[in-house]
Image (cartoon, rainbow, N blue to C red; front, side, top):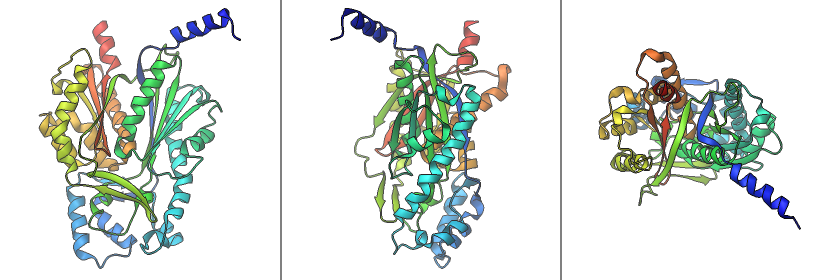
Length: 398
């Protein structure tokens, strides 16, 4: 039996296992497939790819959706070559789930690897210093899952602690950030790699009235974020401090947003009610979150904003409801324009865009100290996180 000396060591370890200070984003990397599809030609591309050009009324509706989407281009792995090799993907009378799973099982970890290597390079430490890995995706239905495959591709330690988040949809990146924060703050010297990767191939279908909005909105991509807490190593530079996180589920909205695995891939349901449901609940969600941080009651225009661009209507509704200045959602609108909605991956792109804007502005421009991250997913679930700008705080302290 362990003696008193062993118990003393355990007690000491428990007292010292927590980090010093809040977790922070230390590095960000992003990646996309090579295939680019421009939004103004997407209806022709999509209806041609699916051999559905006779559906002229539906095609015209797709053109209107694309025109109003606020999107300029998207990156999409699926192309004509893949359709020729796997015609069952566009044949609704043939099962294609196995084909889709086979493709994404290989391609999703590879895309995540590209983003992760960029984040690790910026971080400046070896990949073997990663202690925890969180992988979020709706594009995988196999085991060993994408987290293990990515760990192998990156050469992470065999002792790395892995977590897979599946089917969280557009809130997956936000959920992963909260988990990473908790891991980093409760495990001294932990360094958490978040990887999010999505390929719309898994839910691609022939034109259908109920799914046409999603096909006009979603794109493919991967994002990687490294999270850690103090003490920071030499060369580690915090980009965003992660002060407090919350998760709110809007009651009675389970019907509005969801995914279901079928013989033809994942069937994605997106209700037109989603933007209004978010609008009606966003203010109270934010008030509750900020009041948990020392009873903060901020002016929304005194914050910087990293909002998941679920669609132009969602951004417009949040901007209007909170009376935000147009520049506040500039990073979210730019990411939507350049990439579309990449589901849970998208928040990594927004954070990356936001920090690059901050770096470009430099010391001459006002640096907002406090900010907020928002992501939305099935539930309807709102993931919120209070962020702090380390640069602004250091300037204030000096």
